[in-house]
Image (cartoon, rainbow, N blue to C red; front, side, top):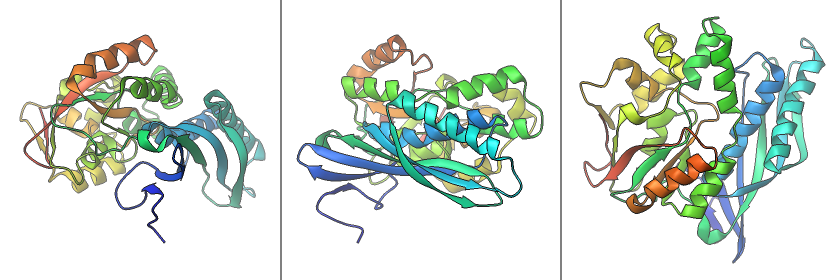
Length: 314
């Protein structure tokens, strides 16, 4: 069964998490995510994976309350202390989020993977969909882009420690504050930008709507070191897949530099929230984000009437 009168969000479209109504005033949000390491430090990897898993609940406007560990670990070939550090990193991030670890499941696997299954709560009438944007809305993005390109550079030994530190800090920053601020101001739509890249997730916001988008590429925040990495060819395979999948929906102005076109398709890990908010609330939302410590939040574009289902990047 994939439909039910109490199912608010299911698998019928590309939403960030499932939402099921329990009562007239309470719904649960369910999501899960796990992946292979993208940094060398196991504790930091645990933090990144947990932060990423929690993000889908924040994108819906909800509050995560419980989580279960998902672990794939090569127990015969890898020191168990590595696993302990990963789990410690994840648990510390759950504690920061006010989330209770209630269990989990592990399997012996040749490839290390870690993540969480997360349950959150929200009022059924306050769920934020990813396709509720309206023409005239401003688009706000809350973190810097470029973690996929940086991760690829790390594997090749081409990234400075200072850059790794900045990227890790971003990937371990919960979207909790950004979500709470957007809910306090009131927004029309939201998604978190992860594996499909900025433009891939922006495209999902246009699904089943009559809207289009204009993105101001120069206003999208990104790690400045990413330009050199991108121009040097440190591009993840997922970037090419994202671009091939969405290229018919996206039109770039001729003056947009190539490194930015690549960056906007870069698959992110634990990325920021992409939010559609009424024009008359946009400045208030940005100010509130900055005052709350979400310093990278920026207005990066707008929702338009036409062309329907297309994204213009200029």
